[in-house]
Amino acid sequence: MVKNLPYLESHFMNKNERVALYIEPPSHHFLGDKLFIVDDGRLNGDRIHAPYAHLRETLNAKGIKVHTADFLPEKANGVKNIYVSMGMLHRYKKLARRKDVVLSAYFAVECPNVEPRLFSALPEASRYFKRLMSWSDGESLKPFVGEVLPFRSFRWAQSFDSVHEAEWNRRNRKFMVMINANKLPRLYWRELTTERKLAVEFFSRTDEIDLYGKGWDKPPLRVGITHMPWTLRRMHHFLLTYWQKLRPDPLLVAARKVYRGTSSSKSETLSQYTFAVCYENMILKGWVTEKIFDCFFAGTIPIYWGAPDITDYVPENCFIDKRKFKTYEELRAFLKSLSEEQITAYRENARDFIASKKFDPFRKQAFTDLFEGIVEEDGEISL
Image (cartoon, rainbow, N blue to C red; front, side, top):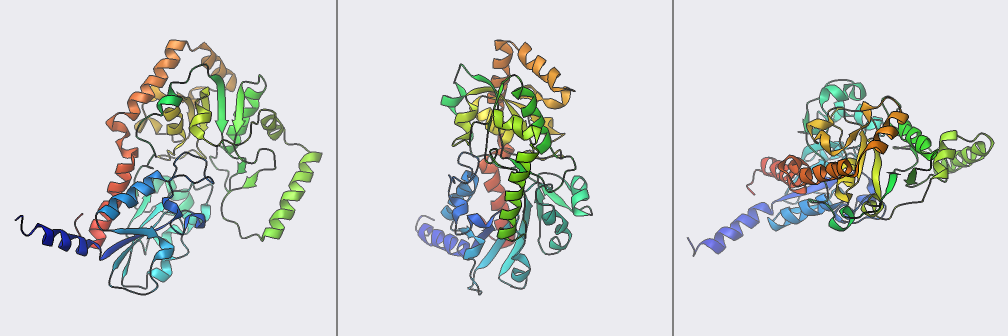
């Protein structure tokens, strides 16, 4: 057996090298393998692409080449090419005509009220992709898709496996913070973008909140894909700026009062505060993004609103559930009533959760395991 080991290793590697994984990133900005750059300054997060980098490193070590979809060869080259899209749908129909390409999975990772066109296109796409993946489920997504599709559930991988000790241990914190860009949704049904502004407006009255993020010194931008020419967009933005000088939006006026600029490090900024307004883009079952975990890593207590089933994933003793308070007056009174011991308990509970097996579905390794399973099944290999 020992004598044959080099041959077996060579055989194993050669077999795996006949399979390659190509990932369509959620934005064209991350083509050219930029998806695997761990720190990207354009994103509002710390080491935001670490899960992709971990996935690539793991599969590379097993002989599987991993690139963004723009590196996929134009012609068949004897390799079975596994294609996975993390949101974009412009390439799959052309690839579906190729026998060397397997349309393995489509991941619906953008919020429906941000990119409704992607969800309305999924009934057709589902006839091509072997798997549809989402944080939510088919029934919950039906209003945006138009029918119930067989979505498979997964959790969004976090970049860290433990709290940031230096930031977590910071004391003498200020009261409250919110980190979000100044944007408007494409759809307003069950959206929480407006609710974020209402929270900022209320706590700005007593100067108890600091606001960070892009664009608060300008009119808000509409999220999602648009086909409006750049010249028209610039004109529209100019007119909005002029209109707001004539008729200022009171919520935006309040936000600017407490606006502190952009944040170069989410963790560093969060760690300066006891509480953080932590609202998802919309209320949707299973839709749990990085926002609540960013708070945990920094030792900040999130005031959460978003996934109605959040306690299926995160213990309720780790965060403050905004749904329990009818008004912001009630919420403020509760926050002010908390003792140092109670505040410490929230923080410790979150720390214990991050260190527990209940957090495992959100780890980078779970994300990598999911992709390994896809590559093994569709590439007909063993990793």
